[in-house]
Image (cartoon, rainbow, N blue to C red; front, side, top):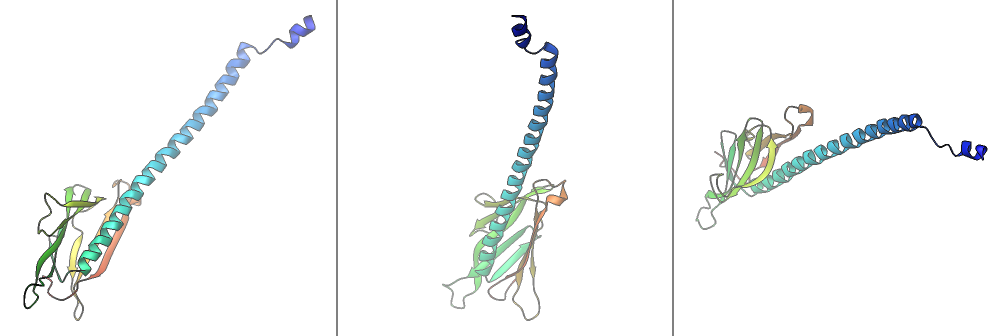
Length: 181
């Protein structure tokens, strides 16, 4: 009977506390690892979404510029695109097709598009966010070439960390015909 009691002693309180503290330390390390991984993944997804929005916005802007015959840039923060008036006899380039602009302050600006208007207020549709500067547009003209609308913007959800910046630079969006102001 004594021999059976010795075999069924179990574990002591000290052994139990030591094993629980080791297990708690290991579990704490695993939780920290998973939490940091989850946070990094969430930040990466948000950064990717901002970059994707900017790429899609740039594609829509390219299409608008390719369908335009003239462009007016105001202060680098707004570009108004004009198309040909098919009702006019000489087809002047006077119809406003769309206006693109940036709005915001500090290091967070948004890119907006307003169809058929010379302003970007009210019904302007936001196309991209987290642009780090407001002045992103310019019109470039070279001798013997069609004028080009240039766009240079950097997208960054965390402007303090410049390594996360994503730059979109497109200076090859040519207008349909001459007449840029």
